[in-house]
Image (cartoon, rainbow over all chains, first blue to last red; front, side):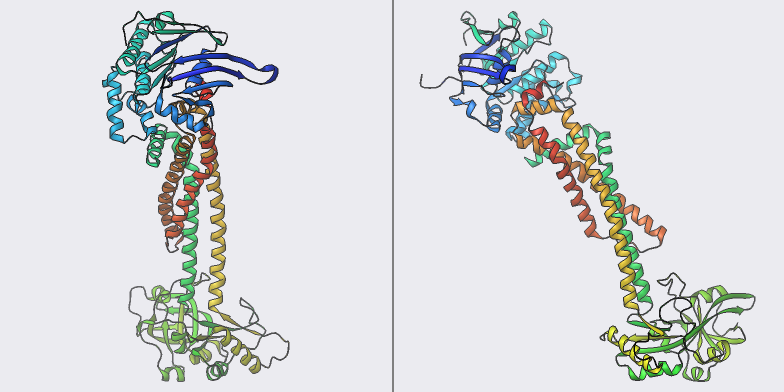
Length: 236
Length: 401
């Protein structure tokens, strides 16, 4: 391949703490994800999937091994350089929504654009469009406390995709929702993956949510235990 | 970038109005106190300067006794008119020499009586004291030479004895002396020492000596020095001349004193200025305390908003942006407090100057300084919490409940 893969983990380990108290969360993870994929990461708690997500999200760096994002070794980057990488290429959706409280949905969605330095008008228009894309066009002025859990998560998705990121990292995005709301969220994610070519990496422990993904990676005890493609789903 | 930070800060502060108000209270009080102290101090200084100026500029007062104050003249030989004449004759650079003598006397007009000070003077008095006659006239030479029973009233005496009636031409009684009113002085107000300068009746010196005091004494010689001349040199010359005339030789101390009004001005304004600085400094300490209040609240705010900071960092805010956000919040808070403090101080010191009857002199410099200082308080005390926020680990911060 002439172009490097979007995400390439090679022999990534992560150790927390030092000496006798140290804990090895990842013990040599190899994982390659190409642009346009929709990957579900599964595994029991303590299997290292969250640690892996933090590394994929450039919030943390490997203790050993390498993480290349678009060919760039993330482990070599400074804190602020990683922040800029997140700003320009990554979008995050969390289990607990993590919206700014007492802040309108529109302002929440605008936030990443503010850090990108987008002019106010453009910011406004793009945030409105993103809210409309998640079906909350009429809710722009509502604060998180005035929205249901499903709606809040949709605002969070709007915030994640408003910058048109290369990768959307979702950490148990349906974990706090009932199954009907969960399916709505998954439908949204599928749409953004299929129609906008946004690569999605999602951690979940619900297999019916993982079923939306075309590839399922299972973690166990700090290593990748299985990695299966589901080619039978609709073509990209 | 900075505009964005300002916008974010305003949003954040608006979300927590009550806390914002309480946070800036310290700064508000500090700024208001500093400006009020300085304003009132400035007013007091100006008042002293004005009062001294109202005595006449470049004035030297020569009295009996080693120091100024009551009882000092008791033992010493009083001056004679000849002493004043000698000063006028032998000392250069003088604009005027006024000999006078005073005594407390009850002035009676009709059914009204008023205890006041009668001063025997000549026309030099009006020059030297820079004091004009508001109505009527000064003395004429023949009246002075003959010691005629005529008088010029101070504004207070005129008001007490005559009320709204016209005093010119009337006769009032000063002890055994019945004298005709020929003039009324301009009102001068309080002196530096807090006495009413207008509570005075002027009569020709010779009339005073003959009919009121019954002696030839001159208790006070007031000398005004030409503007270009050095009062210090004139003062020294006068002291030398009087020592000679009073036969004080060698190391014996003077039994008279020459007081320079300029020096008194300096002394009194110096006192008020020191007091102003002192009070201002005390008030500045409250500004410092206000700053610590801001730091306290900002630290609480950082802890409370840990998750928010985590979100911002995850979304791609760099350290400097988070730092700027919190720093700008602190500065906006503190300078907002500064502005409110300034407004309060302008109104408050205006009220206080009215109450204390000192002139209202608002110093624009101190307002600028107070504002800049309050902003600086925000920077200094906001920096530590802001840095704490900026250095949070995004993973930890996101996990924070």
